Amino acid sequence: MYQTVSRSLPSIGTGLAHYLTEIRKFPILTPEEESTYARRWRCEGDRDAAYRLVTSHLRLVAKIAMRYRGYGLPIADIVSEGNVGLMQAVKRFDPDRGVRLATYAMWWIRAMIQDYVLRSWSLVKIAANAAQKKLFFKLRRAKSAIAALQDGELRPEQVKLIAERLEVAEREVVDMNRRLQGDVSLNVPTHDERESGEALDWLVDPAPTQETRLADEQESAHRHQALRAALQTLKPRERHIFVARHLTDDPPNLEELAVQYGISRERIRQIELRALQKVKAAVQAMAGQPTRVTQPNNSKRQAVPAGS
Image 1 (cartoon, rainbow, N blue to C red):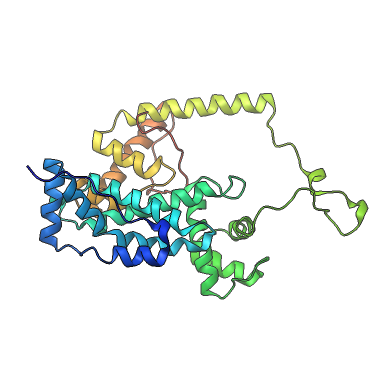
Image 2: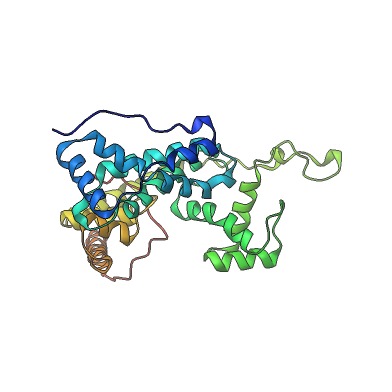
């Protein structure tokens, strides 16, 4: 039997510089060593092998974590979240897929760090949909590229340039830039005059009426029923790929699914398109509408449980 002694990882609590020095002491594994350790962990449950896989990739976590230092969060927490993602990747890594662990793990590391960053910002600042998450993480880089890092409102020409680069609406760039600047007090006067009133006085009650709420609930229930029925027409692999790509807030890309299934990105795209065609046909049949199929569009997704 292989050794199954559990060891502790270096702690970043002693300081970033000391932590980086410590993790550089762990050797980088060769492809053969990585494959051997991965099989020992996967087949034998050898914790020493898992430890070697994790420690050899701690530098990768630190490198990715450094990209998220601009969000005002403790770097120690960011690195810790990335390490959790690395451990999840090691737990699920299959060496027979023909992909290096670093390639597979980087998606898990990034996902855990981004989830932590979003959780740490108030819901008032950040929306929950995938497009807003993407804009949140790319806006700072886009501002840096055009030397627009100063606080305050962006100039119209800067907004237009960033919107074109990120392929989003100009209004979304303005809104996200304001959110990243921090929360604004609702007790701030709307004008310089003392009698102008506060911003709170101008807020409109956003609560829907009872009639509107009932109509929305009925429409939503009908859509969910139609979608659940349509998903039952798919084969298991088609259903999983369709749900992952179209019905989740943070959809994986084609490369991630290709690694998971051990097939090409183009094959994943074909399966996705076929599944989309089947779902649209089934939904439109329930509604009594003629079938019309278009290319996949992931810009709008409705999050429902994968098991629905």
